[in-house]
Image 1 (cartoon, rainbow, N blue to C red):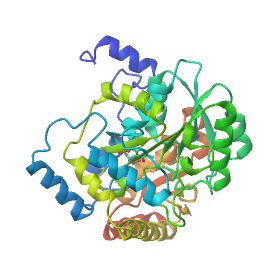
Image 2 (image 1 turned 60 degrees about the vertical axis):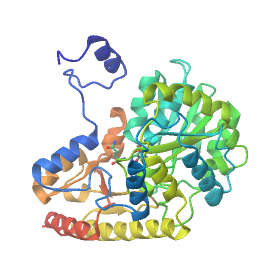
Image 3 (image 1 turned 180 degrees about the vertical axis):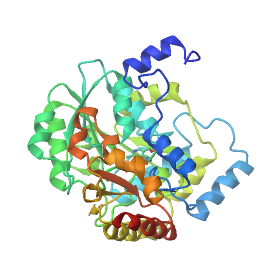
Length: 400
Ligand code: PMP
Ligand code: GLN
């Protein structure tokens, strides 16, 4: 504890990020991966694939290192990757993005989200509306930006927000509406009426929409719809995505954000003091990935959908109630019938009971709202089929 500088401790504690004993509180993902390592359990906690992505993308990174792409890339990102992102947005969504002024490359979606919030928040009266449960970095970034987090609940089984509750949560104090679609942890893909309501409310209250679309190519039933494609949205939307999920390269941390030039300039102003730049040899590789044929992207979604089916069948056979996802890496299941009404306790015991690690949904909600999601558990499906089958076999021990 004594190694932590006092000023830093005050800042992190003020933002509610420090453990009460003054130690660094690990993220739930780090904690659960460590539990999997120490117990030898199958790790269906932290969402990362256990297979490499497309060979052409991996080869391009190796070639870039050999070709000397090992020094700082330009602050906005390499021109070729910026062009590839722009082409990708036109090819899949019909969005026009000027690669020179309307897009920047970031250290994963995480940096894009944090830089966007730090850039957009003016002070403690500003509010950021998020759907709850939410990805863990959202609350941390809102706290670091010094704003107030306002949550709109997503409830099982469909995890779609109530439109009246959404409307009641947005006001003239709302600076940002943050939308993660497809959604981690619930697997929801928001309905057209939800997206339209977000745009209507943002226009009415002059808020900025910040999106997190890292699972854009992993929607199972219909092509993904970026909010920026909706009428009236593009001029007030920052669209964020990353290569981690699309190319099974979560450790590369190449993300991007695009939107109106003035907003991008604001984000870049902050971003240049967070990481400045990152991932020189990975940027050309991601450009190769974004230009892969359509079949790569449709196959990736179909393969993941099949994995969710295997996982879902295993969970049902073990006695869980499964909320089948519409997109993304995760399946949420209700463990109440297995004595898991307190999913946090259930997940702590799961490695010993069944040799599997999973994450309670309570890890993705504010402490005051934990009872609403008490029996729900998140399982990662982004693993090899044989690993999921082995996990399913182990989980069947729970059925007794
Ligand atoms: N947003 C969501 C919803 C995620 O699930 C994740 C985790 N992969 C991220 C952002 C972080 O993305 P990146 O690794 O590109 O920073
Ligand atoms: N996005 C991953 C998940 O939800 C975890 C990323 C991380 O460890 N920060 O599991």
